[in-house]
Length: 252
Image 1 (cartoon, rainbow, N blue to C red):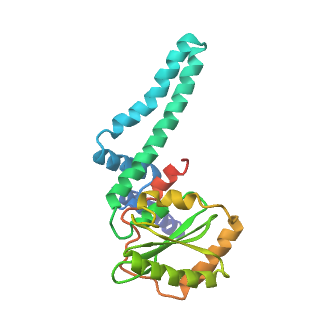
Image 2: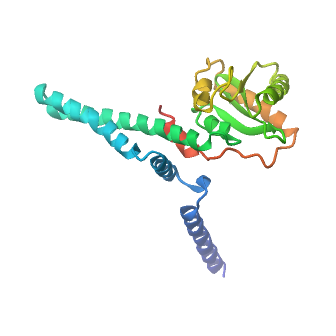
Image 3: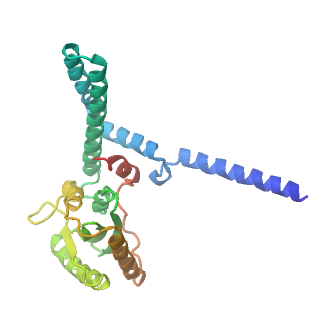
């Protein structure tokens, strides 16, 4: 009897695993997709916005091969030059792929509430981001990123209201993180603001001030700050889940 129950339990578990795999396979939610499917979907999205994209990728891949093959016809060995050309072609195609994906993504989400979080999701390994830590009914939103460059608060919305909201959050975070200097950024196109398309690089290029252990300590302190206030509802985490694209672009 016990053996039969064990076999039945095993069958149920296998059936549940198969059902979950099938659900993810047919899901339209990016959170259920594997990395390769996310990359494939990003390719389709970019190609739909830029019909020249596949040809640009092909050209970026073939150009180094053609050039170095010609070089190899005059400077032996030819096979070595072709292999180098293939390697350079792959690198060039990957760089173009990453650039065009970011451009298409930013173009798609420009002007939408939560778009700053898309840029924060593209930060390299070592950075963590938290969307919508504060917001107003007018949809002025504050996001947070913590990494080697420090603690960064990014505001989007009406610049005048956002600056005041950022100032309040900066004081709160500085106290929670033992008077840590908090960098504030207003995302926008005006003077003193950082455009969405440059936000990722702007934060990524900040001078590295903290090691991994110090970054984790800052994260613990700000998570404690989050725990004493209710999370906001109804504010989008970002118009697009970029987890897979972030992994794909980490090598840039």
